[in-house]
Length: 185
Image (cartoon, rainbow, N blue to C red; front, side):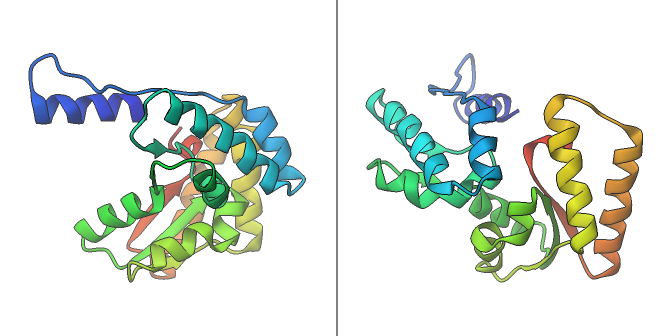
């Protein structure tokens, strides 16, 4: 999805047959998920930092981390490279502001919903961030890792997400951040 959007935007700006010059490095998610589950964020950061270093050496001008949760280790990655990393929460906040929204619900992995690395970045743009309650966060996280990451799309899970979204709206959310790539499935 990212790749498609990037190329569409380049074509809009430059016209004709133009497309983006980009380098793509796909990591083995099992390795990253293992580091997440045992709380070894430094190891995850080092692994992604090595990837970023490879991309920089290959000629990249900047890095985009195509996952919300792994922005938790942005500092580790940035220490290993000299080129900038574009922060996903800043881009998200820009879109929220463009739509004149000031209060959003946040869905994502438990790490993204519970820890401050993402929420505080959104909040720094004067946007109120509302997260689901404990039980709802657990449901969301389980659906992400036990279904969506495995390519399983269930109507029952979609209904759970919709109920949680409605609860966030009832609590004042004017918009919802789908803060995990798989949620869009």
